[in-house]
Image 1: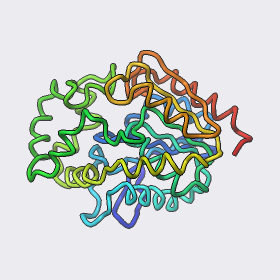
Image 2: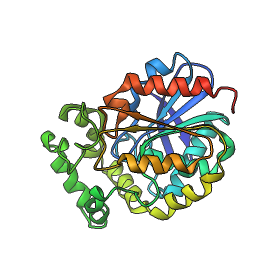
Image 3: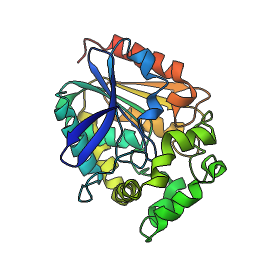
Length: 281
């Protein structure tokens, strides 16, 4: 892992390959590990940069005063890109990371040459209704500490109440070791996550959807066909409909984390899209 020093603290990230940079954004209670199955193939063609955003699966808490509203997070992403001297990126977002990718592209469209969205929050879905208890709970003192204690019971992680709707293939051990361990053990990580959840607002995703109708650069929307609870295909088609120059790809036998359930298909579709839009930047 490499470390980027920003005004809010440290962002850990991985950086593989050469060429135009692809920046991969992950969802809540996740981190860059979610892209581990696809980066080896994609980095043969492009530079793959995968930051751990402060969304609850990160290992280093940010400064307590950091703005972690969607506006604050996209500003943090922009600062991260500036530290790495990146101005012409391909932006990929999955799950909650897709919402931030939309808001970032709305705010810093000059930095994004192509956009890829995969089973993402959008419009009035931010977050999905399945997580309404979480949105209410973070306002209760001690709620995330209680979450952390419950998460020590690994079988709970695979239930629909926690992370079970995200992937067919991730085991309870995977969920614990790859994503949840730091949330359980570090109070600062939980504090960041609390601020993130409190900042979620459909105002941001609806505004992004409205403004991105004028984003004329190539867009790929990849959607896991089995995701019926969090981000159904109907939502994916609406996301696809936002953009003037978009392609829509359905991946069978995949839930929200298409890159976990069908990594070869995800990588192939992404590389094919990028190679076929290489001169459309």
